[in-house]
Length: 392
Image (cartoon, rainbow, N blue to C red; front, side, top):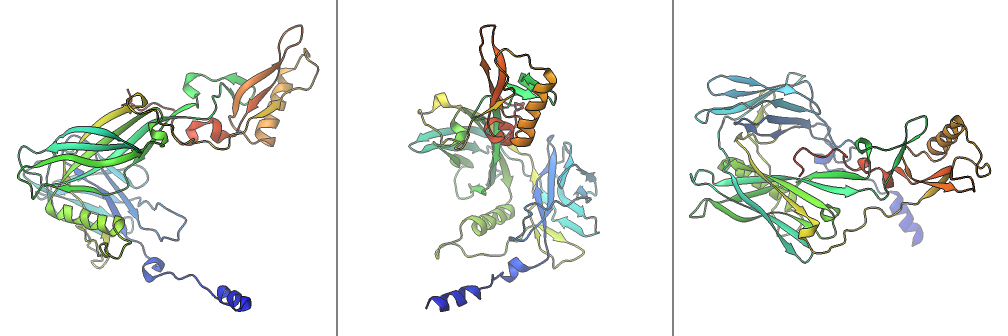
């Protein structure tokens, strides 16, 4: 029986369904035509196979523009990673607009012409404390009764710290004190929404979105350990755009159970002109975006204890000199020993956490440093030590 089991196990082959094994890739278009004074940012990429080690595949070298139904062209400039940007377009609400894309291999794509639909302001953003964390909500209303369909996304930012405070750093020659510009103890982390957040007031007597759930943050999350901020962005949608995002949500977030929605084709409003049979993923809308930010400090919350972000942070003692206490250490000998221990033997870039001394009768004598692994000392490996411009 054991032999038969081994034979069957050895004959198994991985199966890739046709949709996964297909060698082609499709254009993905992300962004919105911003009709106001803010920038328009369109991101172009290509799909990748699920089995691929590459997670991003930006489309570079394309010619991208916004076109009006009056034949006015607004070109976008390529920046980095497949992003194409234009300063504020200040478009007319009485015209319709489309996106034009021509790739480096001369594939031409157009979106449908879409009307300008401006989002009303976000009235408020607030949070409720629950037993296992906080829930964040938004309120909005449209006094003109124009926008019936909405979409939201958000950006999170929070303060976190490394496990050890590093007061010293090597400049390549010797050990020097850190200053505030290169501190690596306090950093800011960030994240963006990864779910589709949509809502409709079409069946309501008033165009009002009340107590709209945005996201939740766990009481054990590092995000709530010090200070947390969330920026919520709100988009007005047409009925067609709402249907696209609703189908996308059902196909990506609500599958798995036998009573869940079954997969369906997601039809956007972007088309390949040179190859009409080629699917294009994305939906282009036009309008202004409204946003609102709030800050939450740990003083506003119960005394929760976040799950430790560091579970293996050993300290090590690196000796610079084994001479008797009080011996004079030439600066080049200290440098040589420091560089050998840190850069060769321990492979640590900026791990210095403290100093220790031998104290002979004649006075203190530096003999070494304490250090740890970079991920336990350098918070910039997980975030940025540059305070965001909006932080307060």
